[in-house]
Image 1 (cartoon, helix red, strand yellow):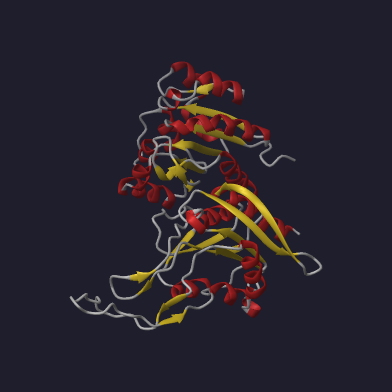
Image 2 (cartoon, rainbow, N blue to C red):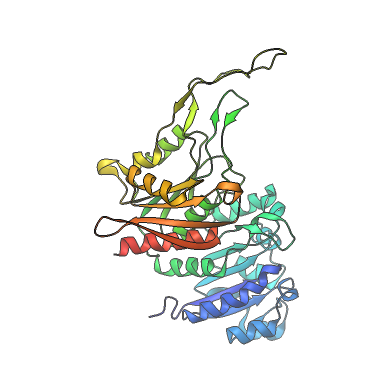
Length: 404
Protein backbone atom coordinates (compact mmCIF):
# COMPACT_ATOMS: atom_id res chain seq x y z
CA UNK A 1 0.00 0.00 0.00
CA UNK A 2 1.19 3.51 -0.76
CA UNK A 3 2.47 5.46 2.25
CA UNK A 4 -0.20 8.19 2.03
CA UNK A 5 -3.14 6.13 0.79
CA UNK A 6 -6.49 7.58 1.91
CA UNK A 7 -4.81 10.58 3.56
CA UNK A 8 -6.23 14.05 2.92
CA UNK A 9 -3.66 16.83 2.86
CA UNK A 10 -4.51 20.51 2.69
CA UNK A 11 -1.59 22.32 1.06
CA UNK A 12 -1.33 26.08 1.62
CA UNK A 13 0.89 27.78 -0.97
CA UNK A 14 1.97 31.22 0.22
CA UNK A 15 3.99 33.89 -1.57
CA UNK A 16 7.61 33.41 -2.63
CA UNK A 17 9.60 32.11 -5.55
CA UNK A 18 9.75 28.70 -3.84
CA UNK A 19 6.04 28.35 -4.69
CA UNK A 20 7.10 26.76 -7.97
CA UNK A 21 8.29 23.73 -5.98
CA UNK A 22 4.75 23.23 -4.69
CA UNK A 23 3.70 21.92 -8.10
CA UNK A 24 6.19 19.07 -7.88
CA UNK A 25 5.16 18.50 -4.25
CA UNK A 26 1.51 18.08 -5.25
CA UNK A 27 2.47 15.48 -7.85
CA UNK A 28 4.63 13.52 -5.42
CA UNK A 29 2.02 13.58 -2.66
CA UNK A 30 -0.57 12.23 -5.09
CA UNK A 31 1.87 9.56 -6.31
CA UNK A 32 2.01 8.34 -2.69
CA UNK A 33 -1.78 8.03 -2.62
CA UNK A 34 -2.80 11.29 -0.94
CA UNK A 35 -5.75 13.46 -1.85
CA UNK A 36 -4.44 17.02 -2.06
CA UNK A 37 -6.57 20.12 -1.73
CA UNK A 38 -4.87 23.47 -2.14
CA UNK A 39 -5.28 27.01 -0.85
CA UNK A 40 -3.40 29.53 -2.97
CA UNK A 41 -2.75 32.89 -1.30
CA UNK A 42 -2.66 36.16 -3.22
CA UNK A 43 1.13 36.11 -2.93
CA UNK A 44 1.36 32.49 -4.04
CA UNK A 45 -0.75 33.28 -7.10
CA UNK A 46 1.94 35.74 -8.22
CA UNK A 47 4.26 32.77 -8.80
CA UNK A 48 2.01 29.82 -9.73
CA UNK A 49 -1.43 29.91 -11.32
CA UNK A 50 -4.66 28.44 -9.95
CA UNK A 51 -5.00 26.53 -13.22
CA UNK A 52 -1.64 24.78 -12.78
CA UNK A 53 -2.40 23.91 -9.15
CA UNK A 54 -5.86 22.60 -10.04
CA UNK A 55 -4.58 20.57 -12.98
CA UNK A 56 -2.01 18.78 -10.83
CA UNK A 57 -4.18 18.29 -7.75
CA UNK A 58 -7.33 17.35 -9.64
CA UNK A 59 -9.26 19.52 -7.19
CA UNK A 60 -10.71 23.04 -7.17
CA UNK A 61 -8.28 25.64 -5.84
CA UNK A 62 -9.41 27.78 -2.92
CA UNK A 63 -8.31 31.40 -2.84
CA UNK A 64 -10.82 33.77 -1.25
CA UNK A 65 -12.11 33.89 2.31
CA UNK A 66 -15.05 36.07 1.30
CA UNK A 67 -16.12 34.19 -1.82
CA UNK A 68 -19.78 33.10 -1.42
CA UNK A 69 -19.22 30.41 -4.02
CA UNK A 70 -16.18 28.89 -2.31
CA UNK A 71 -17.69 29.16 1.17
CA UNK A 72 -20.87 27.49 -0.03
CA UNK A 73 -18.95 24.69 -1.75
CA UNK A 74 -16.59 23.99 1.13
CA UNK A 75 -16.16 26.62 3.84
CA UNK A 76 -12.93 27.38 5.61
CA UNK A 77 -14.05 25.49 8.71
CA UNK A 78 -14.69 22.33 6.70
CA UNK A 79 -11.41 22.74 4.86
CA UNK A 80 -9.58 22.68 8.18
CA UNK A 81 -11.67 19.79 9.56
CA UNK A 82 -11.58 17.40 6.62
CA UNK A 83 -7.81 17.36 6.25
CA UNK A 84 -5.65 14.81 8.04
CA UNK A 85 -2.73 17.24 7.83
CA UNK A 86 -2.28 20.90 6.90
CA UNK A 87 0.99 21.61 5.11
CA UNK A 88 2.21 25.15 4.39
CA UNK A 89 4.85 25.08 1.65
CA UNK A 90 6.29 27.55 1.10
CA UNK A 91 5.63 29.28 4.40
CA UNK A 92 6.56 32.93 3.98
CA UNK A 93 7.64 35.17 6.86
CA UNK A 94 4.28 36.90 6.58
CA UNK A 95 2.31 33.65 6.79
CA UNK A 96 4.37 32.47 9.77
CA UNK A 97 3.77 35.79 11.56
CA UNK A 98 0.02 35.68 10.89
CA UNK A 99 -0.24 32.12 12.17
CA UNK A 100 1.85 32.87 15.26
CA UNK A 101 -0.29 35.85 16.24
CA UNK A 102 -3.69 34.49 15.32
CA UNK A 103 -4.54 36.66 12.32
CA UNK A 104 -7.50 35.50 10.23
CA UNK A 105 -7.69 38.09 7.45
CA UNK A 106 -7.26 35.64 4.56
CA UNK A 107 -8.53 32.17 3.75
CA UNK A 108 -5.15 30.59 4.56
CA UNK A 109 -4.72 32.32 7.92
CA UNK A 110 -8.36 31.67 8.87
CA UNK A 111 -8.01 27.97 8.08
CA UNK A 112 -4.85 27.74 10.19
CA UNK A 113 -6.55 29.47 13.09
CA UNK A 114 -9.66 27.28 12.81
CA UNK A 115 -7.74 24.04 12.49
CA UNK A 116 -7.72 21.26 15.05
CA UNK A 117 -5.43 19.10 12.92
CA UNK A 118 -1.62 18.72 12.80
CA UNK A 119 0.21 21.52 10.96
CA UNK A 120 3.58 21.31 9.21
CA UNK A 121 5.32 24.32 7.66
CA UNK A 122 8.27 24.58 5.26
CA UNK A 123 9.70 28.12 5.67
CA UNK A 124 11.13 29.94 2.67
CA UNK A 125 12.52 33.47 2.77
CA UNK A 126 15.62 35.67 2.63
CA UNK A 127 18.31 34.80 5.18
CA UNK A 128 18.00 38.08 7.06
CA UNK A 129 14.24 37.65 7.27
CA UNK A 130 14.66 34.12 8.61
CA UNK A 131 17.30 35.13 11.16
CA UNK A 132 15.44 38.26 12.30
CA UNK A 133 14.47 38.01 16.00
CA UNK A 134 10.82 38.56 15.10
CA UNK A 135 10.74 35.54 12.77
CA UNK A 136 12.68 33.38 15.21
CA UNK A 137 10.27 34.33 18.00
CA UNK A 138 7.31 33.48 15.76
CA UNK A 139 8.81 30.13 14.81
CA UNK A 140 9.55 29.31 18.45
CA UNK A 141 5.97 30.19 19.36
CA UNK A 142 4.56 27.90 16.66
CA UNK A 143 6.93 25.07 17.63
CA UNK A 144 5.79 25.38 21.25
CA UNK A 145 2.20 24.96 20.04
CA UNK A 146 3.09 21.73 18.26
CA UNK A 147 3.58 23.00 14.71
CA UNK A 148 6.25 20.94 12.93
CA UNK A 149 8.92 22.79 10.95
CA UNK A 150 10.59 21.29 7.90
CA UNK A 151 13.81 23.18 7.25
CA UNK A 152 14.71 25.70 6.07
CA UNK A 153 17.91 24.67 4.35
CA UNK A 154 21.04 26.70 3.69
CA UNK A 155 22.09 27.57 0.19
CA UNK A 156 21.82 29.94 -2.73
CA UNK A 157 18.66 32.06 -2.60
CA UNK A 158 16.68 33.59 -5.43
CA UNK A 159 17.70 37.07 -4.28
CA UNK A 160 21.34 36.22 -4.99
CA UNK A 161 22.35 35.89 -1.35
CA UNK A 162 23.48 32.70 0.34
CA UNK A 163 22.46 31.35 3.72
CA UNK A 164 19.61 29.82 5.72
CA UNK A 165 16.09 30.40 4.43
CA UNK A 166 15.91 28.20 1.35
CA UNK A 167 12.85 25.96 1.32
CA UNK A 168 13.66 22.30 1.90
CA UNK A 169 13.76 20.15 -1.19
CA UNK A 170 10.50 18.50 -2.21
CA UNK A 171 11.79 15.00 -1.43
CA UNK A 172 12.64 16.10 2.14
CA UNK A 173 9.18 17.59 2.63
CA UNK A 174 7.61 14.42 1.25
CA UNK A 175 9.65 12.24 3.62
CA UNK A 176 8.63 14.41 6.58
CA UNK A 177 4.96 14.06 5.64
CA UNK A 178 5.30 10.29 5.24
CA UNK A 179 7.11 10.03 8.58
CA UNK A 180 4.28 11.99 10.21
CA UNK A 181 1.80 9.27 9.25
CA UNK A 182 3.99 6.18 9.47
CA UNK A 183 6.32 7.12 12.30
CA UNK A 184 9.26 6.68 9.94
CA UNK A 185 11.73 3.79 9.65
CA UNK A 186 13.84 5.22 12.49
CA UNK A 187 10.94 5.69 14.89
CA UNK A 188 12.01 4.64 18.39
CA UNK A 189 15.72 5.13 17.66
CA UNK A 190 17.77 7.75 19.52
CA UNK A 191 20.53 9.49 17.59
CA UNK A 192 23.25 11.94 18.48
CA UNK A 193 24.85 14.04 15.73
CA UNK A 194 27.85 16.31 16.22
CA UNK A 195 28.22 19.36 14.01
CA UNK A 196 30.40 22.40 13.40
CA UNK A 197 33.80 23.25 14.85
CA UNK A 198 35.09 23.26 18.40
CA UNK A 199 36.80 26.34 19.81
CA UNK A 200 39.66 25.74 22.24
CA UNK A 201 40.39 28.94 24.21
CA UNK A 202 43.84 30.48 24.46
CA UNK A 203 42.47 33.27 26.62
CA UNK A 204 39.03 34.93 27.04
CA UNK A 205 39.38 36.47 23.55
CA UNK A 206 41.33 34.07 21.33
CA UNK A 207 40.88 30.41 20.47
CA UNK A 208 42.10 27.57 18.28
CA UNK A 209 39.34 26.64 15.81
CA UNK A 210 38.60 25.67 12.25
CA UNK A 211 36.43 26.66 9.30
CA UNK A 212 33.65 24.11 9.68
CA UNK A 213 30.25 25.71 9.03
CA UNK A 214 28.15 22.90 10.49
CA UNK A 215 26.02 22.67 7.33
CA UNK A 216 26.59 18.96 6.84
CA UNK A 217 26.04 17.97 10.47
CA UNK A 218 22.89 20.07 10.79
CA UNK A 219 21.54 18.56 7.56
CA UNK A 220 22.19 15.03 8.84
CA UNK A 221 20.39 15.75 12.10
CA UNK A 222 17.36 17.03 10.22
CA UNK A 223 17.39 14.06 7.80
CA UNK A 224 17.47 11.52 10.63
CA UNK A 225 14.63 13.35 12.40
CA UNK A 226 12.61 13.32 9.18
CA UNK A 227 12.81 9.51 9.22
CA UNK A 228 11.44 9.40 12.75
CA UNK A 229 14.57 9.32 14.90
CA UNK A 230 14.71 11.12 18.25
CA UNK A 231 17.73 13.33 17.49
CA UNK A 232 20.07 15.27 19.75
CA UNK A 233 22.28 17.68 17.82
CA UNK A 234 25.50 18.62 19.61
CA UNK A 235 26.65 21.76 17.87
CA UNK A 236 29.83 23.76 18.11
CA UNK A 237 29.76 27.50 17.36
CA UNK A 238 28.04 28.05 13.99
CA UNK A 239 25.91 30.73 12.34
CA UNK A 240 23.14 28.22 11.59
CA UNK A 241 19.70 28.24 13.21
CA UNK A 242 18.81 25.26 15.36
CA UNK A 243 16.87 22.69 13.29
CA UNK A 244 13.25 22.57 14.38
CA UNK A 245 11.77 19.50 16.02
CA UNK A 246 14.89 18.17 17.68
CA UNK A 247 17.03 18.85 20.74
CA UNK A 248 20.11 21.01 20.20
CA UNK A 249 22.94 21.18 22.74
CA UNK A 250 25.38 24.06 22.21
CA UNK A 251 28.98 23.47 23.19
CA UNK A 252 32.32 25.21 22.69
CA UNK A 253 35.12 22.74 23.30
CA UNK A 254 35.90 19.13 22.45
CA UNK A 255 35.60 18.09 26.09
CA UNK A 256 32.15 19.67 26.29
CA UNK A 257 31.16 17.86 23.09
CA UNK A 258 32.27 14.49 24.51
CA UNK A 259 30.28 15.10 27.70
CA UNK A 260 27.14 15.85 25.68
CA UNK A 261 27.62 12.77 23.48
CA UNK A 262 27.96 10.42 26.45
CA UNK A 263 25.27 11.97 28.66
CA UNK A 264 22.79 9.24 27.72
CA UNK A 265 22.71 6.06 25.63
CA UNK A 266 22.08 6.40 21.90
CA UNK A 267 21.32 3.89 19.15
CA UNK A 268 23.03 5.99 16.48
CA UNK A 269 26.02 8.33 16.66
CA UNK A 270 27.12 10.44 13.69
CA UNK A 271 30.32 12.37 14.35
CA UNK A 272 30.23 15.03 11.64
CA UNK A 273 31.87 17.81 13.68
CA UNK A 274 35.37 19.02 12.90
CA UNK A 275 36.78 18.54 16.39
CA UNK A 276 40.07 20.24 17.27
CA UNK A 277 42.71 17.56 17.86
CA UNK A 278 44.66 19.78 20.24
CA UNK A 279 43.97 22.40 22.90
CA UNK A 280 46.25 24.69 24.90
CA UNK A 281 47.63 22.88 27.93
CA UNK A 282 46.85 25.99 29.98
CA UNK A 283 44.45 28.71 28.90
CA UNK A 284 45.02 32.18 30.32
CA UNK A 285 42.14 33.65 32.34
CA UNK A 286 43.24 37.12 31.24
CA UNK A 287 43.66 38.49 27.75
CA UNK A 288 47.23 37.96 26.58
CA UNK A 289 48.54 41.46 25.89
CA UNK A 290 50.88 42.45 23.11
CA UNK A 291 53.78 44.62 24.30
CA UNK A 292 56.13 46.46 21.98
CA UNK A 293 59.38 44.57 21.63
CA UNK A 294 58.01 41.49 23.32
CA UNK A 295 58.58 38.12 21.63
CA UNK A 296 55.52 36.35 20.29
CA UNK A 297 54.01 34.02 22.91
CA UNK A 298 54.35 30.26 22.57
CA UNK A 299 51.78 27.73 23.65
CA UNK A 300 52.12 24.16 24.85
CA UNK A 301 49.37 21.95 23.42
CA UNK A 302 47.76 18.83 24.79
CA UNK A 303 45.65 16.25 23.00
CA UNK A 304 41.86 16.51 23.06
CA UNK A 305 39.69 13.45 23.71
CA UNK A 306 38.94 11.36 20.64
CA UNK A 307 35.14 11.47 20.52
CA UNK A 308 34.72 9.06 17.59
CA UNK A 309 37.05 6.45 19.08
CA UNK A 310 35.45 6.83 22.51
CA UNK A 311 31.95 6.25 21.16
CA UNK A 312 33.17 3.34 19.01
CA UNK A 313 34.63 1.60 22.07
CA UNK A 314 31.93 2.43 24.60
CA UNK A 315 31.31 -1.17 25.67
CA UNK A 316 27.76 -1.95 26.74
CA UNK A 317 26.70 1.65 26.04
CA UNK A 318 28.15 1.68 22.53
CA UNK A 319 25.64 2.89 19.94
CA UNK A 320 24.59 0.14 17.55
CA UNK A 321 25.78 2.29 14.64
CA UNK A 322 28.71 4.71 14.90
CA UNK A 323 29.46 6.86 11.85
CA UNK A 324 32.57 9.01 11.56
CA UNK A 325 33.73 11.72 9.18
CA UNK A 326 37.24 12.28 7.88
CA UNK A 327 38.15 15.72 6.55
CA UNK A 328 41.42 15.19 4.71
CA UNK A 329 43.83 16.81 2.32
CA UNK A 330 46.20 14.86 0.13
CA UNK A 331 45.66 11.15 -0.54
CA UNK A 332 42.04 11.01 0.60
CA UNK A 333 41.37 7.29 0.25
CA UNK A 334 44.63 6.19 1.86
CA UNK A 335 44.34 8.54 4.83
CA UNK A 336 40.64 7.84 5.34
CA UNK A 337 41.07 4.08 5.15
CA UNK A 338 43.79 4.27 7.81
CA UNK A 339 41.49 6.36 10.01
CA UNK A 340 38.61 3.93 9.49
CA UNK A 341 40.74 0.98 10.58
CA UNK A 342 42.05 2.93 13.58
CA UNK A 343 38.81 4.39 14.98
CA UNK A 344 36.65 1.27 15.19
CA UNK A 345 33.48 2.93 13.84
CA UNK A 346 30.97 1.12 11.62
CA UNK A 347 31.13 3.57 8.73
CA UNK A 348 33.33 6.49 7.75
CA UNK A 349 32.47 9.30 5.35
CA UNK A 350 35.56 10.97 3.94
CA UNK A 351 35.77 14.27 2.09
CA UNK A 352 38.54 16.39 0.63
CA UNK A 353 38.67 19.79 2.33
CA UNK A 354 41.71 21.09 0.47
CA UNK A 355 41.36 24.45 -1.27
CA UNK A 356 38.07 25.31 0.41
CA UNK A 357 36.16 22.56 -1.39
CA UNK A 358 33.93 21.57 1.54
CA UNK A 359 34.09 23.83 4.61
CA UNK A 360 31.35 26.42 4.24
CA UNK A 361 30.22 25.09 0.83
CA UNK A 362 26.69 23.90 0.09
CA UNK A 363 27.83 20.72 -1.67
CA UNK A 364 29.91 17.77 -0.64
CA UNK A 365 31.58 14.80 -2.32
CA UNK A 366 31.84 11.69 -0.18
CA UNK A 367 33.84 8.48 -0.16
CA UNK A 368 31.86 6.04 1.97
CA UNK A 369 33.90 3.42 3.85
CA UNK A 370 32.32 0.28 5.29
CA UNK A 371 33.27 -3.30 6.05
CA UNK A 372 32.07 -6.10 3.81
CA UNK A 373 30.74 -9.37 5.30
CA UNK A 374 34.18 -10.96 4.90
CA UNK A 375 35.84 -8.15 6.88
CA UNK A 376 37.40 -6.28 3.97
CA UNK A 377 37.09 -2.51 3.67
CA UNK A 378 34.96 -1.25 0.79
CA UNK A 379 35.04 2.36 -0.44
CA UNK A 380 32.15 3.75 -2.47
CA UNK A 381 32.34 7.21 -4.05
CA UNK A 382 29.12 9.20 -3.84
CA UNK A 383 28.67 11.79 -6.58
CA UNK A 384 28.96 15.43 -5.61
CA UNK A 385 25.61 16.62 -4.25
CA UNK A 386 24.06 19.19 -1.97
CA UNK A 387 24.75 18.59 1.70
CA UNK A 388 21.01 18.05 2.18
CA UNK A 389 21.06 15.24 -0.39
CA UNK A 390 24.19 13.73 1.17
CA UNK A 391 22.38 13.81 4.52
CA UNK A 392 19.29 12.19 3.02
CA UNK A 393 21.37 9.41 1.44
CA UNK A 394 23.13 8.76 4.74
CA UNK A 395 19.85 8.76 6.69
CA UNK A 396 18.39 6.23 4.26
CA UNK A 397 21.48 4.04 4.71
CA UNK A 398 21.05 4.28 8.49
CA UNK A 399 17.39 3.22 8.16
CA UNK A 400 18.41 0.30 5.95
CA UNK A 401 21.03 -0.75 8.53
CA UNK A 402 18.39 -1.13 11.22
CA UNK A 403 15.80 -2.70 8.94
CA UNK A 404 18.31 -5.38 7.95
